[in-house]
Structure formats: structure tokens, C-alpha cells
Length: 259
Image (cartoon, rainbow, N blue to C red; front, side, top):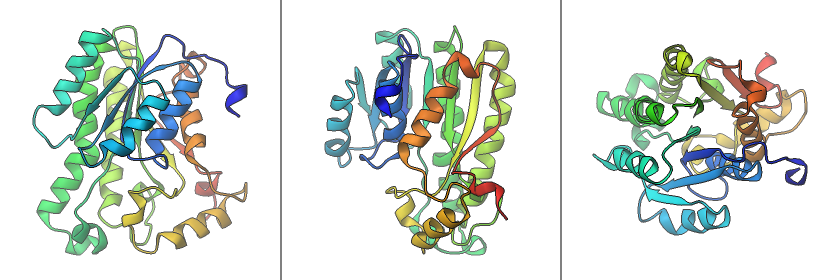
């Protein structure tokens, strides 16, 4: 498919947060943006993740690479300061990170601790708001922001637990940010992929059952992959989608429409 993609994002600059390895949704987004001609900034979580992410950033010719743990004071600001200094602008922002302590994620919502809930909300939701605040001044000519959600934000998915309310909050944040940033020609999208075999998903109990159910429910009859998500985001970042903002875009082969 990549051979058929035209460089419609040439001249655009994209920050992609959340690449952990070649199976990451964020990597699919970065690869799709690069295929469409965009210049990339890619971050890694910590030194443990760096050896997995740095080769991918090199492969995609990322011109800015940096560590970014949104829970570490000053790191988020440092990334945006560097983008401002080296690029002077930003066109695309992808937030593809989520976290909950294992004991809070794998227990039911009733058993989730206040500390675990707060941590999940901060990393998985509020960090996107903080990113948007820093990105908006760099999008003086308009731009597009993406945050990754999941079907469990709107329907009960067994074993998704605390992440359900957290992703619901993230989708609401996208709507409110779309409203606030719309006058600046900045569009905001919550992207809701079908279940994918990512490192983050591996923390969910009985995840293989979710994969099988999604494939069975999909009108297309098969699972989506990270490039399906990436190319959807690439389209939404182009002028072809200039009047689309604020909604939750499902990239799941239509599984969400089936009861």
C-alpha cells in the first residue's frame, strides 16, 4: 500500500509520542506520516526503551529524537522547547501512551486504588492536555492532534477495568480541546482502533479472547493493523479532512457497529 501513498504531508512536521517497538500503534502512525512526506520527531520512554526505538527513528529518518516520560518533571517541556528551537512549528501531534499500575489494571474497578486511578488518569489522559497546551502555540498555521482511545471507553469490555473510565475521560478531553482549539484551525481526534497485539495490550487479562471476538464481529472479517491506524491518521492530518474534528474515529473494521 505504501507505494500508492502520495507525499501529501510534505512540509508537515509531526511529533509522535508512544513508540515502544515495531508493533506500536505510534510506530504505525509515524511510518504512515513519513510515507506521506512528513518530517518526524520521535520519543522513547526511558533508557530501557531507547535501544528498541532509536533504530526505528533512524529508519524513518526522524530529525528529532528525545526521551519523554510524561511523569518526569520537565521532560515534556524540554521536548517542545527543542521542537520550537529546531523546527519553529508543529503540524501534527500523536499521543499514544497509556499506563495503569498492574495491580490496579488487573483488578476490577471496585478494587482500583485512588493512587492507581490518579496515575492512570495522569499518564493516559491529562498528559494529552498538557501536550496540547504546549503544542498549540507551535501550530500557528493550524494543525492536527490525535489521542488513542479504545471501544472500552463507551461500552463495558471485560477485563479493561480502570482503563474504561480513563479512556472515556480522554475522549471527552478531545471533544473539549477540539472546541477550544477550533478557532485556531487546530483539529483534535480521538482514534479508537480495534484490539491490536501491542506491548500495552499484553497487560490485559484474556487479551486473546478480545482479538478473536473483534475478528468475528468485524463486517470485514479480520483484524486491523497498526498501518490501518496510521494511514487513517495521515488522512485526517491532510486538508482532505479539514472540516472533521472532535469525534471518535473507529479504525476496527466496523466491529463497533455490531451488537
